[in-house]
Length: 250
Image (cartoon, rainbow, N blue to C red; front, side, top):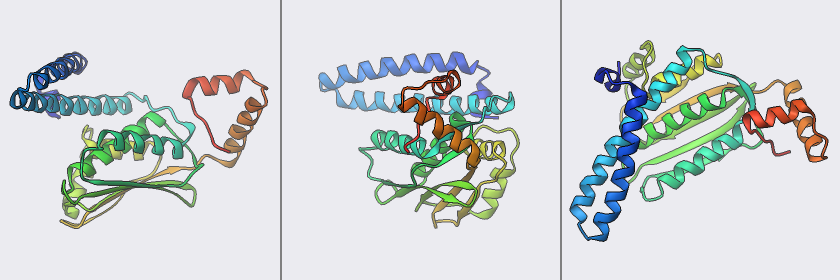
């Protein structure tokens, strides 16, 4: 059971309160800094950070519920573009952090999975990596490569790592809602298991394998794009793009 669940408060209601508190904190922080009340502003930022951490825990609760309730809807999507978008968003949010953040992303890979569940899984892995590296000399890297019939997404860091026993314990937990739990649930949903390499004080590497879209699906998907580029629209292709907003670079 998570800390949020122990409170007994409805997560949706708590999320609304925390979001409102964040909005107030940001406004007050701006006013305090304008009045050169820097110590008060610092304390307010610490409070806002607590709100953000709690909201992240609530998001993982929602993710766990999505799997429990069967709300995982696989579709064909361009994982290369999704990983690139997530990398860009995280890099923007961490631009003032000294941790080195890089990516090596193979283009044009189509996979079959739920894109929302995948995004939540990847963001969890990235955040975990940032939290477990030295904030002065830390390095985090995302890679995306074709590996046989899979797209292999890895998050690699040079952080503190953990023992094999710790990894086994976290992967053996049932129905949790922490980052490791979301990782395991996503891998189960696509029929794979996470590949983890780590030693204590020796860094940490997690690889998630997602099945590549079958060739027939990939060809049909690309054919829809060609027709759309030519101005020939079919109801099915229009619904596909309206539904998941996917796009492919030919």
